[in-house]
Amino acid sequence: MATPRAQLVVLPRQAASALPHYELRAKRQQGADMALEIWQLPAAATPHIKQPTYVAGLHGRNLSLVEHRLLRRLKALRINLHDLPAIDALRVPIDEELAINLGLLFRALAPMRNRNYMAAVAAGIEAMTKEEAGYWLGMAMHRKYPRRVLMALRFLLIDPNA
Image 1 (cartoon, rainbow, N blue to C red):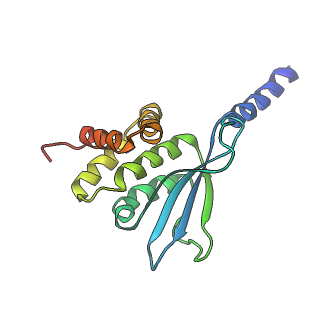
Image 2 (cartoon, helix red, strand yellow; image 1 turned 90 degrees about the vertical axis):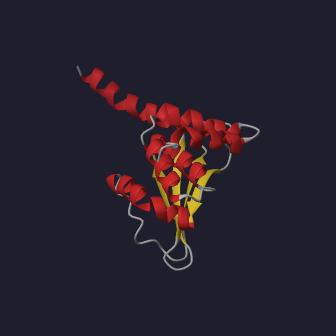
């Protein structure tokens, strides 16, 4: 009976090492502004990544418009962004599902200006499954014209009757 119990302990560790590693980086900018970035780190699951790779980032006015959504999600993971150090950036490992979702959110919202459209896109991306968000983020990162992919996503998420 001791052998099956030992196998249960070993399997989750192997599964965890077979996943990509992501990191949330937050840093304070001028005044109360902050910048958030998602980075993919080298891992056994991603041997083609030799150094940290930038996925997406958001700062300034666009971040402040969705900050309450982000803080709610990060609070559930016990990540506090209120006490950021003034000099060095905060670096926190995050799981793949959150990294994909936030990466897509940051990429989609970065060039937008209309507050109502931004809220609609943020709500739509937040409601996406991991697979759907991964599909759109992969298209936005690895296509020749990623702006077209992100524009198509925005069109799908914005209600024309709003």
